[in-house]
Every structure is written in structure tokens, then in C-alpha cells.
Image 1 (spheres, rainbow, N blue to C red):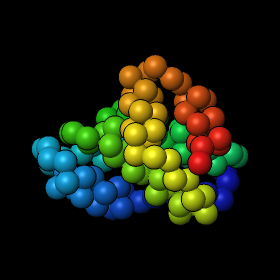
Image 2: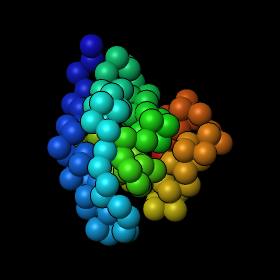
Image 3: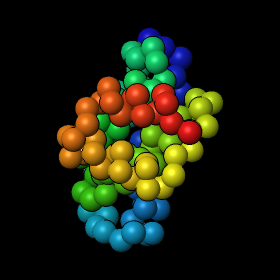
Length: 120
């Protein structure tokens, strides 16, 4: 196991609640098991970019929230990176495009991780 500090479900739910207030949508609930699995996805990845990309991939594919999974994935990745000492600051347009491409499967997890590695 690596030493990444992982986000808790409570933090993820707070992020999702804030996103729903800001962007609208249904707070119809979440799948606790899928959320916990997504938040645990970074474990076992020795590279921080791979760890963050694994979490993002699990969120956009497993859809633990009723709505807003793509937005949540982006914010949670940024928080995970910051929590682990990485100050990754892409533009809003670039970040939105990258996570939307991951969600649409236009790019794979490795490409998303490369974007994090080479980003601003």
C-alpha cells in the first residue's frame, strides 16, 4: 500500500452537495459502495497522477452519484492532488474538457494521468 491520503466519503458528499447547489441537479442520493470503491482507487498506484486518474475513472464509469459525476470527479481529483501536496491548476476549460473526454471514453485513464503529469 502507498502513502496517499485518500478522500473520505463525507468529504466527497460535501463536494457533491456544493456542486448541486452551484449547478443544480437532483440530490437523489448516492451508492455508498461505489463511492467508497472510487475513493479507494488511488491505493496501490505508486504514481500520484495514476492514482488520481484511477479515482476519476471509477467515478465517471461507476457513477456513484445520482447526478453530476463528471463535475464531482474533477473536483475530487483536484482535492486529492492538493491533499497530497500537488498544486495542479489547469484552466477551467482545460479541466472540463479532460474529465469530459474521460467520461466519454475519448481518452483512457493513462492519457488522463499524462495530462495531470504534464499539466500546469
